[in-house]
Image 1: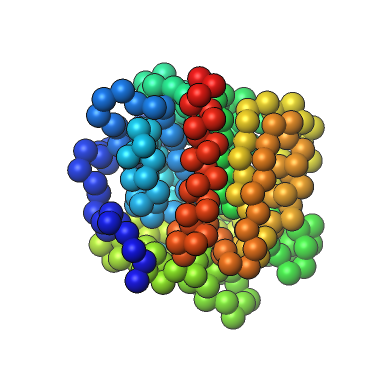
Image 2: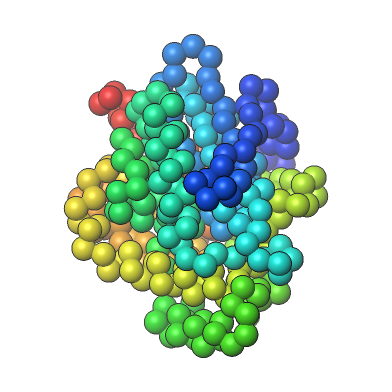
Length: 314
């Protein structure tokens, strides 16, 4: 069993689950956990494709206990923020620019309403969107943390051919239909659990939340999401603005990640003028913050050192 004094299967006392309305009227499900006394600063945490913020309550509790206010929201079209297609629980988006528009507006309001220093964290797809948002000037926090960022998709045939095939297959019929039936990765014998974490207890926390709130479950992505993911990551990797983005970045990368391209992440983050990369080997699957204690504690420790440095500078 994973040793944890914190109840990972309950919204903590003092935290609030609310709704936020985007400029086009779309409603996003949000989480806010303030601190008593004088805050050390504020963290906006954004999860990956299909995530819900409940998956990260244990990490939130750690930082909130150290004086950081915590905020998060489920991305448009997934989790508790509705669906953009009638195809069941399929995670669909027409253009990743819609995610960035929500991020821009939400982050602006969050930064104006919360005490600094302001830290934005993103896991997986959230890591990609946070970095893209910073490069495009959608937000200007004091620092950012990228955890297993989706800066390239894991494809057995390579990114270029994978994108071409997705455009061909997704261009036939309704592109908002699911790209595959189940699992995080098609045409593989890997289980979803083995792709995400080696810690069975933390993995089962997610399935518990899914059973408790089945309406928040996001299934496979749509073909359009897949096409746009290939395009958005490709364009970000090639962006000359990466070398001009001066927000300090800490990136945690699992080199054995079976879902995102770790080599692409290392190369992309390496272009940033103020970035530090912490690598994890085969001991870590994709969800570094929900891994076994040996991995998770190292990751939390690295982030804490980074946060303390930013707090002292502020």
